[in-house]
Image (cartoon, protein in one colour):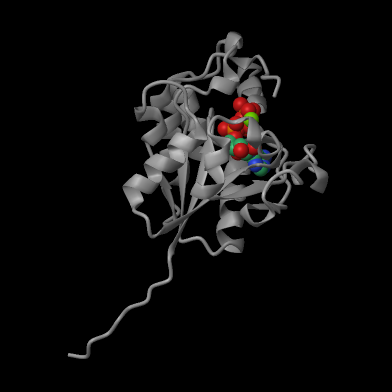
Amino acid sequence: GLARVHIGRRYRLGVMGGTFDPIHHGHLVAASEVAARFDLDEVVFVPTGVPWQKKGRKVSQAEDRYLMTVIATASNPTFSVSRVDIDRPGDTYTVDTLKDLRRERGSDVDLFFITGADALSHILTWRGAEELFDLAHFIGVSRPGVPLGVKDISHLPAEKVTLLEVPAMAISSTDCRQRVGEDMPIWYLVPDGIVQYINKRGLYRDNDQTIPEDH
Ligand code: ATP
Ligand code: MG
């Protein structure tokens, strides 16, 4: 047959890290919007292990957060879920997440780390910050009520960071947990299967779990 050199386009993998306690439509819209704008082949959701930024509040078991993430993403053929952070012992650091994914997926994959614009401005305080920009491109998505001026990222390498406005979704996991604790509905804030999973497992009923985090 005809010898053919297939010069494939590099695979573009979005990485959406989060506590996902619970996952909600804000996360899903953000991932979907970034996937479309950046022509991503796949977005992998990566529930954190021990979220060190969130010490001081009770975080649901990793297995519950993992399963909710699987339930919420199952119907989208370009969404997947990775266990790298929940299977790695100790605190979760983004630099380890990206290194593990690169190891698993190979070197011919471009990584796009998706994060809230609020978290992005703190990026240089993360452990391994100097390595992060070699591992991935960073996309900060706007969140309603959390504006980010250009000056906030002026200290980050411009070719490695993009800010993107996504359709406004004033939804947070903190608010969802609080609502469950107060017997208020979370229908339409989270996928139907997540409402049902939360009820089935009795999550967020204990008011100790609903203390809002302070960042
Ligand atoms: P919590 O209220 O417990 O902090 P959260 O809603 O912020 O939860 P996380 O799991 O902490 O959810 O978020 C994971 C990522 O998704 C973060 O980068 C966060 O900025 C982003 N994100 C969360 N909610 C939204 C939203 N409504 N729109 C866009 N991005 C969001
Ligand atoms: Mg948060």
